[in-house]
Length: 115
Image (cartoon, rainbow, N blue to C red; front, side, top):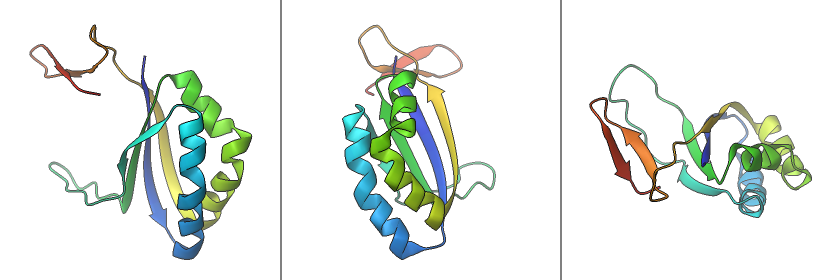
């Protein structure tokens, strides 16, 4: 079952954070992860949530995501992130579909969408 790491980041040291952005992708890939969203514009459709920076990672499983987050390969990058930004991060289970795609609930039923 896929897992997702959802991250809101407020960068306060841009130069150090740029070094973090160079170090983190190889560690994510090593644990089977991939970026679905990395920065970019956000628009609040409801409420007032306006994250300064938003990242969404997908991993094959919660175990793989947790292994990445705790890994020695990510440790140096994590230290740079801690030094350069305030982060709020969630790890969450995805929903598997029969065809291997993520399942999106519409409230009235279930529809499949590519993961």
